[in-house]
Length: 600
Image 1 (cartoon, rainbow, N blue to C red):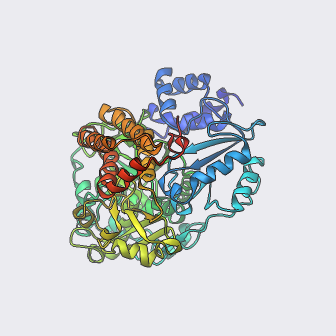
Image 2: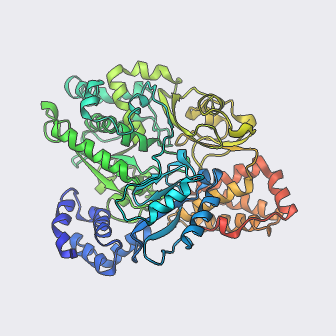
Image 3: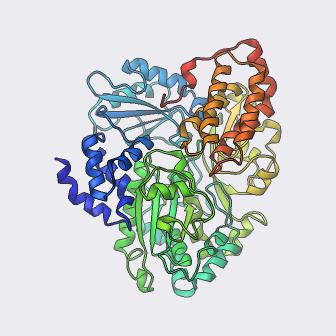
C-alpha cells in the first residue's frame, strides 16, 4: 500500500476536526502504523493533506517521542526506568535485557526483530519493573518472566505472548469509582446501564438546566483530580454563557506523572463512567463537541474507550438528540504521541490543534479562549468520572465523604517499596500512613519507611515522621507538599536519596518542552550537577548551587513545569542533606549510564 492509498482514511480523519491542522497527530500515527516510521516523503504527504509546510510537520515529528524517523525492528520493547520502576529494580532489568538481546537502548537486533528503547514513565507503576512490548504492558518483570519477555519479543507480532497478564491490586469497593473495576475485560453498556449507568446524565438532560448542574457539582465540593485541585463547578462557570463561538470540552487523559496510573483503569474497566461525565459536563457548559486527549502509550485504553463510544452512539447516548432530550454531543478520541508536557492543559490544547505541545500564556484562560480560540473546559478523567455519582446520588452525599473543602474519594496510586502496589479508592480524609500501612500492606520485606512522595514525582518529599497527614489538597499543602495526581511513591530504608533525585532530575530534563529558558537550561543544569555527584565528582558547593538554580526556576516560566522540577531538588536536599553530604565526602559512585537521559 502506498501513501496515496491512505488518502481515503486521511479524509475521514480530517473530517472529525474543526481545523484540518488538528489532524496532524492522527495522520502521523496513520503513516507510522502503515510503514513503521515517518519518512521525509510521508512528512510531505501529511503536510499536503492538512495544508501546512513540511517544516511544521517536521517540528511535530521531532517533538513527540513515539514517532520514528527511521526504520525500527518488527517489535519494539520499551523498558521504563523512571523512579517507581527503578525502586523495584528496573536498572538490573534493563541490563538483563541488553545482555539477552545483545543490544543497547536505541539499537535493533541484527535480524531486525526487536528495537530496544529506554523510556520515562509509562504510568504502569503498579506493575514495576515493567516494559511495553509493542502495545502491551508487561510486568512485574522478575525472575523467569524476563526470559518469557525476551522470547515474546523475538516472536512474530501477533503471536500469543507467554508472559502473564499483570494482576495488580485494585480497589473494587467503591463507593464512587472503583465498584466496577472487578472485571479486567471491562464493564460495557448493558452492565453499566443495569448498575444505574447514565441515570445521572438522564436526570441532567431532562430535569435540570445547565446552571443547576453547575451548582450541584459546586455544592459537592468536587475538585480537579488531575493535580491542580481547582473547584470543578467554579471552573465550568467561567465559560461565557452568551458566547457566539462554539464551546469545547476536553478530557485530559494524557496521564504522564510518574507514580500515577488511575485514569488508565477508568478508561479500560469503566469507560462509560467517563462518557457519562462528559455528557453532563458538556450539557452544563453548552458544548456539543468533546475531545478525549489520551496519551499515546495507552493503546488498550484508546481501544476500549472507542468501543464504549461506539456502544453509546449506537444506543443514542451520544450523537444527535441524545435520548430524545434535544441535546447533541460528539466525542472524538485524539491520541498524543509521547510528551509529558501535554498533561498541562494549554500545552494539551496546542498539541490538539496540531502543533508542538507548548504551554500558552494565561490570561486568556481556556474557558475564554482555548481550543481553536473558543471557550474550552479541560477536565481530568477521574474528575469527570466522579460527576455521574454526584448527579445520581446528590451533592450532599458526595460532599459528606470528604472534608469541608473537598468532597468525595480519590483513586490513590501506591507504588514503590510496598507489599501491594495498586489503586486504592479512599475518602480524601484517609491519612498517608493509613494508605501505606493498611491499604498497601506496609513497607515490603519488613524494612523501615524512609520517605514518601505523596502526589506524583513533582510533589515535595515527606519523611517517615511526616506521614500522619490527610490526603486532601489542603492538608498536604499545609504539610509542605501537595496531593497532586494522587501518586504515592514509597521508599524504604535502602533507598539512596542521591539516586532518587538523579532519577527525578533526569525525568524533568528529558521532558522539558524547551520553550522557556529558565526551565530548558535549569532542568539540564540540575541533571548534570546531580549526575556529577552520583559519579563521585561532586562537592558540597554543588548542593548550594542546586538550591540556587531551583529557586531561580520557580515562578519564572509560562507553566509550572519548572516549579515542579525545582520542588524535588529543594525537598530532597532539605530533608536529607546529611545523606547528600556524606555521599559526596565518601566518594561513592554509581554507573554514569544509570542516570543518562534515555534520549541521549
